[in-house]
Image (cartoon, rainbow, N blue to C red; front, side, top):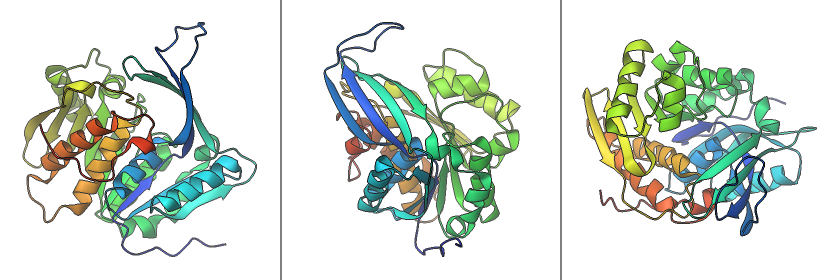
Length: 321
């Protein structure tokens, strides 16, 4: 059976992971070897790639997803969910004899922090050759988004296809890994990392504020040949942007909130960023910083509700930064 014909009008293509989230809530995250009593349990739809795609689709962008699900109950539920969210699912393949990916999440309700264990399942079968099949889809898009919950080589192939067809790319280095191919960083239009991911990639420690994030960005630019724009998110502190188009730093503070659940906030940020860039008119110097400000607003709003995708807003949140 051949690849589906490339649908027209998909502004964003996300290549990445689909995980069912199994979320346990407790007052705090247990210490190693400790058993504690939880307060709530929920299932939800997750995976960094799918989260980012849904976050963008909810804002009105036409999105398509490239990934894989298992031929099981979770896979059917997830496929139906992506359709319900308005995502083009032509390149979501159902695989036999392998489970849908699962993420087991514990959320501490006192501070909203979380820990996550992922079992990749079908997501582990998103190969470079499978990504290559989606070239017509990528070629007809405005923004391509990738992460690292699929094989590095598969995300690299998506970035290469975006470069080939002059499509803007966002590389969310999540989860962070060492020894990324330098060319992967060099061909990315926008590199996006959180503080812990920046520490892993650069080898620096204690990245927690504007000054330390700026040191990480300078190392990425000078030692890793990353000459395009770089974003480091700093949780409740805010976001530091190096805009390569203007050769300027911008720091965007996050609003001060009492977080309920931080799960998926980074994905909401990336999805909103992609939406704003796909919707931007022309090539104004302000497009990227405006997109970052909006992404901070939407991601901050999402931490006020439990869950991952269910916490993502359906509109652009007013910017009060």
